[in-house]
Length: 217
Image (cartoon, rainbow, N blue to C red; front, top):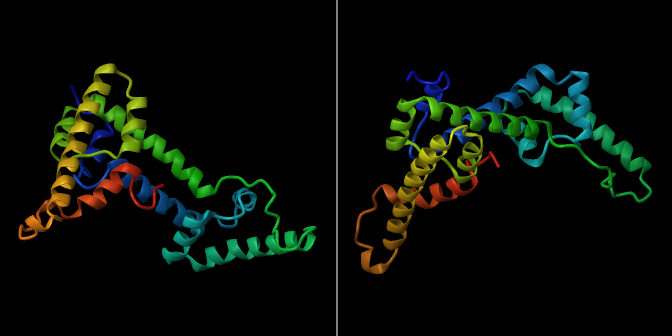
């Protein structure tokens, strides 16, 4: 059986300490935000969506600042948002509400992230079913966070693929649980003399595997 066309991209980024779907989603999310600020900030339809959502969500607003990619783009977006906000305040029956009763649409970058995240989960499930090489490498060096393992399982087309993905996903997460138990065990004063091993950051990885990579929630 030949490898699935999408298997190599997942195979190359497998690591024991990160979910490949989280990793690809985060890369795509940052690239989408940069592209928007550089190329689409004056697009009327995009600006309409930004206005309807009241701007970016808290996380993506600050991501646009911290990226340092395009201060002019960030400035243009928020110039319009500030003007709209002041207009709403001026017409509000109770000044200070800032039009908070208006129903807002989803942040444009959040909507994009959700779309590509679902797509990457489908691609991973398809690659899993068609690539023995991916399954073999995942057994040695891979892990999926709980949210993306669940999504991938929902899209896996064959029962045998679901079963093998469950088995591999559990094995990787069981390994993390063992390392976390080792880390916590060494916090006991009776074991305080023992050197720290690869379990030193298991408490961080445990959070990552429960909720996904930081910045992708």
